[in-house]
Every structure is written in C-alpha cells, then in structure tokens.
Image (cartoon, rainbow, N blue to C red):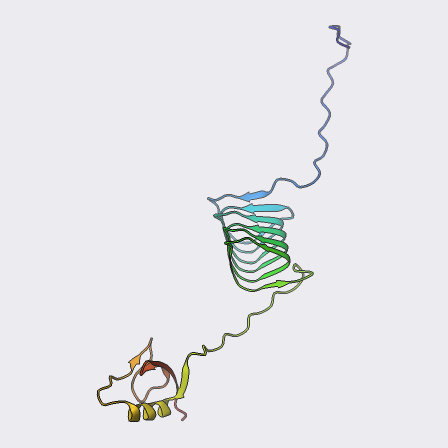
Length: 198
C-alpha cells in the first residue's frame, strides 16, 4: 500500500464531482450597472444597481443602494434598497434601510423597525397568480369650500368692508368677476369657483 513500487498502471483520474444540488449562486446586478428593461430568471437575483423595468425571479434580494422602478414578482423578496412599483411575493421582508412606494400583495410580510413603506398591502393565498387591485379615484379635499361663481361674488361683496383688499388668486386662477372658475382665496378661505352655467 505504501510501497515505492510502481504497480504498472496509469495514474487514476480524480472522480468527477457530484452534480451540485440545491441553489446555485445568484445572478448579480452590480452597483455600477443600470438595466433598462425587464429581468426574468428562474433562479435567484441580487440587485445592487438600478433596474428600470419589471423583475421576476425565484428569489430576489434588493441591496441597500439598489433602485428598481417597476413591478417585482418572486417567491421570496428581501428589500434593503428602493422599489417604486408593486411587489407580489409569497414572502416579503422589508429591512430597516428599505424605501418602498407601491402596493404589496403577499402571503407573509415582515417589516423591520425604520423601514419606509408607502402604499397598500394585502394578504393573498396566491399573490403570484392574483391581479393587483386598481387604485380608487382621488376625491376632492374636504377642506375646500365650493361655491357658485355668482353666489360667492355677490355674498363676499356685500359683507366685505370697503377697506378689504381684493381676493388673491391661487395658482393660475383669475380674480375677475367674469371668471370661468378656479381656486381663489377670499377672506382667508380657499374657494373653488365653478364655471357659471350658460
């Protein structure tokens, strides 16, 4: 076994490595890389750069300095960076350093203290197969007083003292009496004028 004699045969080759089972190394988008378009992978992706498009993968890690603008779909998502767009995943983890602006459809959601999230989140048994809800129309702010253009002009003229200054227009609103509508500040109140009926 330990003899110095040559056994007469050629040296034996090393056995072939066993095929690797389990997860392979993730595909990495480095911090100096900008991608304009969609990313689709059957494995794992780690994004440290910028992606302007949708991302779909088995597992996704969004690095602390990464930015994604688009929809993100994966079984597992860990967000440490910025996402502007919707997230659909079985498991979502929002880390302390993350900044997410968009809706999240999830099976499980974990949010660390200090994470920034602006949007709606909703539990789903099948977040990857279900459609995201559409946003409801935005209503008018409740703090605005709405008045007919003729009614506001006649009531404010009769109550205003002679020394009162004229109404100050806000934005691109006009302050003349033949106004076709707009936003005007009168006596410290914001008035939305509707166009007069013709």
